[in-house]
Length: 270
Image 1 (cartoon, rainbow, N blue to C red):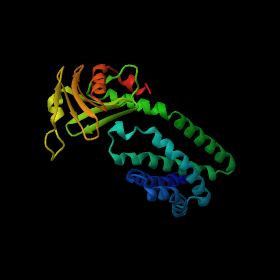
Image 2 (image 1 turned 180 degrees about the vertical axis):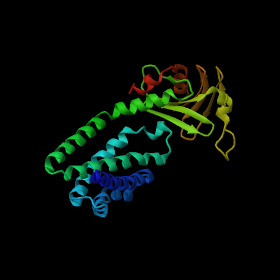
Image 3 (image 1 turned 135 degrees about the vertical axis):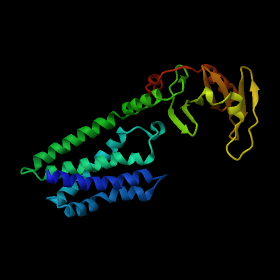
Image 4 (image 1 turned 30 degrees about the vertical axis):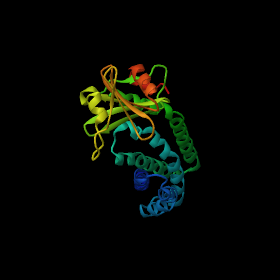
């Protein structure tokens, strides 16, 4: 048990370092990528010897191999940042758990009397776990999305017969809304209590003058944006809807086509 605990401590330190690299990486992040790939093995050798893990070299080598497999699987189990609302720092936990598990398994396996059999079993077990998680990742994503959408205090709408290509829950100060991206347009579902279509249409970004909007039939308000498209605001089934599209006709059509939907229908339709 001492070997197991010491190996887990080694892995927790390395996993924490990997977690910091993961949550601080932005864009291409070449430095973070190379550090994440090259750091674990030499650091684990040093730490394994410092923690007096028996057969430190073998434990470090096999632990690093297990870590490379477990980190993607543990990250895949976590909900995506676009729907979870988790603080970014919390996404360092999956690599930390992966590190502790990987080196604990490796340290325990290589220090058995007949070490090759435990090593083989550990490799098969890790491989089976990783394969199962990565193959089931689409279902994991959908499950997290359904749970997150069910907890949002906004009635859900969707375009009949169409699956959104992207679902996001945006949590701005004073406004939590659902963003649905379709091939023809993007629909943002806001609480009706937040504003009226007219007020939402003219509301500018901080420091900018109010937008100029035109009223359409049915208490709908529209404005053009600099990219050549339009933004249409209206009320549909008790929801303040903001539709971004390339044309007025498409925006009006999609707004009028939105119907009540469930969290399951939005999450599992893709």
